Image 1 (tube, rainbow, N blue to C red):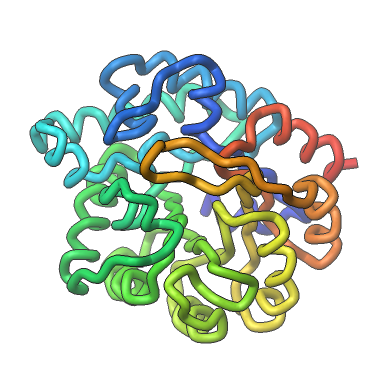
Image 2: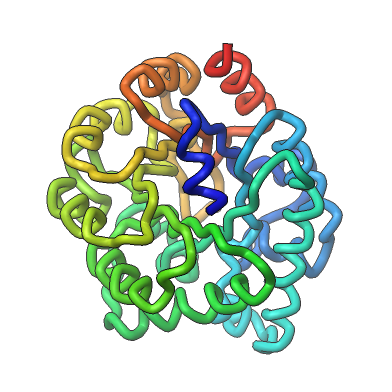
Length: 296
């Protein structure tokens, strides 16, 4: 009942972008596994980032497993048993950092994250339903066995993948989860599907307790908020990036002008958004500012 209980609060603060924060802390994440590579090369760096977000006031922190699907590990020459060990380590590190101050949610990045070509921001991939289900199920099962009960199917850009997650979750009635998507613009999922069609699918998933948008600019999310509130049966979760655009070839973020996360968050809270945090390029300082602003 961890997430369900949190949703009884007026506002809940989520953490920020793990991969970009660990990079800002001075650690190299230019790897096929992105920040998940640190689970094997430097686990204490993972702990330090989690702890920084907890100390900043985040009430929910996400495991460093966004890129860490079993298939992603296999693609990098790591065995399935080793992948299990690293995923278990991710849970241990997040749980240690959270203590009794935050709950831990398992981060489940989309199929596009494994491809490493930025397609989690475009939805430009097409696999079978079974491929999507298997991709998510392997990691989900390991994280459940490691003690996680709250999950974030996040940065989902593709309607067929959402449908596959919907089918998968029928077999996991006891977990609590949210789904967050990336947007092409304020009216469309990244793959071009209308927001209305996406929300219809999400509304039918019983154990999805919250729905929203992440790793999309504040400006685009702000333009979608009223529609999200009107159409969604679920409490809303919003965690935008800093507004920068990701260059998948150079693996860097390109500056773009965006609106203030904190200023937008004040409006979102007033409209009833339940969970607010940040994604890429949003660090502990920004989360601290959210806490100070939204909890006064």
